[in-house]
Length: 420
Image (cartoon, rainbow, N blue to C red; front, side, top):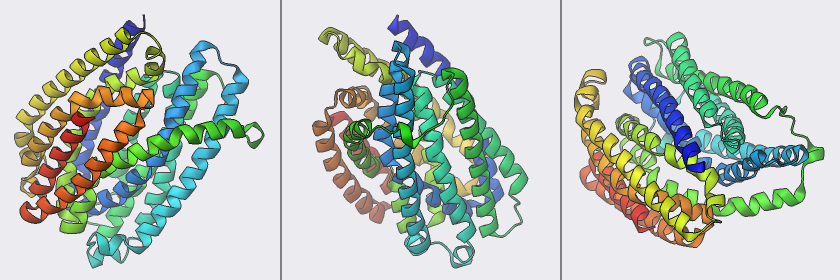
């Protein structure tokens, strides 16, 4: 029963993910055409800062998923209300603290570190303010997303993701004008993403009410200090492992910005978004398996072994097939859609696809180790991988430029994931 349920959910989620990714593919060239290469690079650097800071959400989010999964087993309504109020308060604190940290970075060191052109930096304050608000709404969406994931309502979260792309696409079409000054284009683009996040939060809240038949009314009176302590104890190892994962996999955007500026960063981002599409599609199996992992691990070793073997096989096979398909079409697609300014993208994508395919061998084992709480082994490899990755990225980027940075990223991610 569990096996057929997971397969059915993964299939439906996969179909919805394709819809969402098609919308993303349609959105990206429109955005770049509207704002230009350098302006898009500035936008990417702003938004990537917020994406890296949200490491503190991961552990709390997993705690919510784990506890809300008990809803199907008949946990009392009062316990669910305490969970929502307690974790909601924690997420509020994380959101406010992260937004404050992002504000400090954006308004102090962002411009000089990432070589933002003076003519753009002078009028970038409105865009930075909207980026902070967007990041805050993203946290709200994550909280609602985790609640629904705990109820195994994966299809609803993917519908919301598709709606995000639609709202952003409409916002870009209506708000961003090609002949506007660069700072105004960046501001309007950020406003479009803020509108998308607000729409997603509204949709997720309505979906939660329909799925759980419970209003979202966090209250200080329902906050459980003991539950809050459990959440924080559970969350910190995930935050630590997520931090090292980001250091290995995600800091190449910052390195590109600091070493080469917004233009090359835009080129790298286009390549990484193609890789992200492949990665997201192949990760749907993990998204479905995770809520069941803790309960499955309580059964026999034979069940665990079968889950690991089959999970590894299917994830590697799916990733490999998608990688081969993407590698075959990336050059003509990029040439037609993005033009000569992005001629480096196919080579970057080929290197990253090789790294992604190799690292997919360890993804299932990685997720299961996290479900088992085996953080010592994860941290050991990831800390070593983060240090080695940063060193290799900077060294190869100095020698070979952007291609060297991508080669270093592929090598580091593959070795760390397979080693785990």
